Length: 248
Image 1 (tube, rainbow, N blue to C red):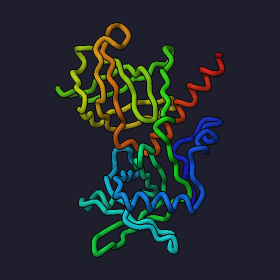
Image 2: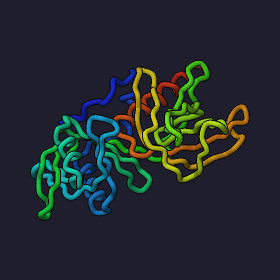
Image 3: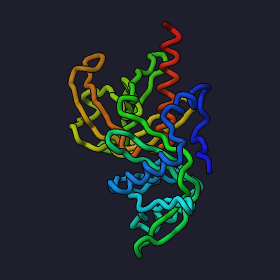
Image 4: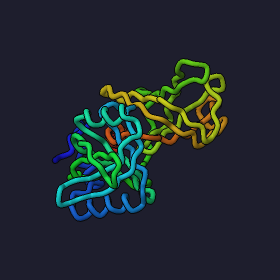
């Protein structure tokens, strides 16, 4: 079972991602077993970016090409997962972000409780924190992040830099009053393509006067970012990095 590309990648990006991919069956099974032993939190996304559950991997059965994970407590969420033609899994292990995709899930039972099963993935993408290098969007092609406003509606914030792990935005005082640790649900960024990404973001830092024009620089960490969205951001970052190097 191959992992279908979530987006059409620009030339060369797939090659750049190859160095982060595991294809060895032995290594993939070993990594899945560590996730199981550590009871690592795994986010399972269906086809819609904001349609996901938080789960744990329960067992891997290589003889049956089977990976079992915990079902959601919500029956409606389980039905959406079972109806999806493709599932995307994301986890973090010792500072390494792990992503893989599978095809359709099926219901099963594990230790007498409801669970879901999929085929063991053929490839797994691993991204170290140090691989999350940041790039600044060009002034001629600015990037904006939409965030919810506490009073209702949406506010558009200029993106100062972005990586697969998060982004920094410029925050003018009248727009929002944010504090570290605050969770912004339902943020969105539209990348060239266009590709619209929807995700949650945690406020990690607030630095008044550190952004251009005396605005506040706010550091955000992406939360519950689907594997497909990670690939789209990686594509964007690599493309801008290529353009920068071509000008040198």
